[in-house]
Image 1 (spheres, rainbow, N blue to C red):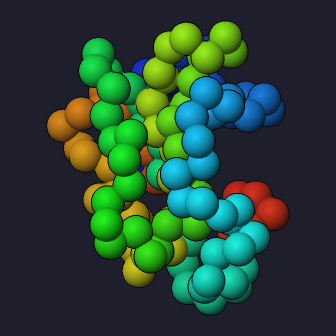
Image 2 (cartoon, rainbow, N blue to C red):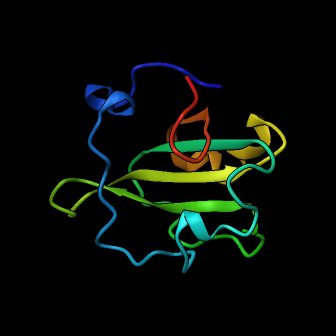
Length: 119
C-alpha cells in the first residue's frame, strides 16, 4: 500500500466526493448491482493520481470484479485528476493491477466495504 502526500490538499481525506459527471458510468450499473453482492470477498478502493496524460478511460474486458469505476474530475469538470475504482480482489497487489501503473504519479490502495472504508 502506498502512502504519501502527493495528493493536492490531501484529497484522500476530503469529505467531498470527486465528480465524474462529465463521463458516462462505464460499467452500466451501480455498485449496488454488483453481481458479487456486498459481502463476498475482499474489497478495495484503488485511487490513481493522474500524471500529465489521461489514462484508463476504458474498462478492461475482464472487469467482472469491478464494483465501480470512473474518472476523477475537477470541480468544473474540465480537468482529469485521476481514476477511482472499487474492486473485489484477493489482495491489495492484485487490486492495484486494475490501473496502468506507469500512467499515474501515485496509486493508493485501501481496504473498503459497502457503506465505506472500515475503521
